[in-house]
Amino acid sequence: MARAAYNDLWTAARNMGRDVKLYCHWTGGDYYTKFADYHVNIDGDGRVWVTTDNLAMIKEATYMRNTGSVAITLCCALDAVDEYRLGAYPPTEAQLNAIAQVVCVLADALDLTIDLQRVMTHAEAADNKDGLWCHDPYGPDATVERWDLLVLREGSPRWSGGDELRGNANFYRAQGLLKDV
Image 1: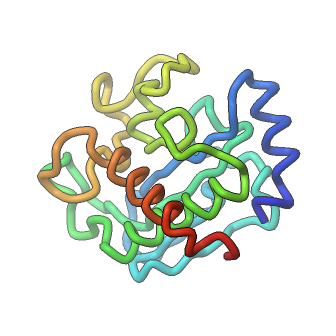
Image 2 (image 1 turned 30 degrees about the horizontal axis):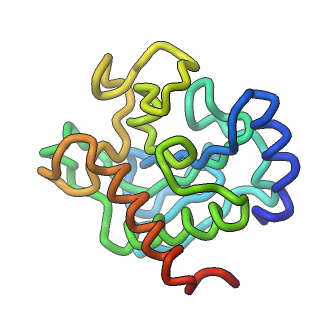
Image 3 (image 1 turned 90 degrees about the vertical axis):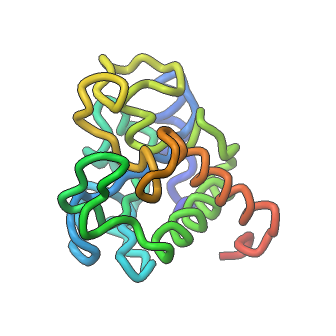
């Protein structure tokens, strides 16, 4: 699917003056409720659900950043309060493993480097951590409207979520095990 959407995603992103982006979210729900606002949903067991047959379709998942991007979400974080209290539905290890694999596969198919400039958590995007000022900050360092994946586990260091997610995706890339998926 990513290869089929390649040209449309890259054209849209280039028209925005940037590369294609992968944005990683959580739904703020339970482990099995999926949302069409995202291209890819990952349930509590790590199963992957795609909500479209065209990954270039614009989904309304990341404020002012949806064109030329793919939105991936973990079905979790209902009643999460802050990085120390992720609620009754924190990200599962199965989800964290699956999202790293999904990022790896999509990045490979879309010729993306797995770095902060191209693969971001919603928390990072909300605070413009990539240096693109698409909007006023609304993340953890500002109004805290969105802080998805600021951390992947309760009590982890602030802002560690994106680095850990990208590191795991780069680990899979280095292994070459997902090349033909």
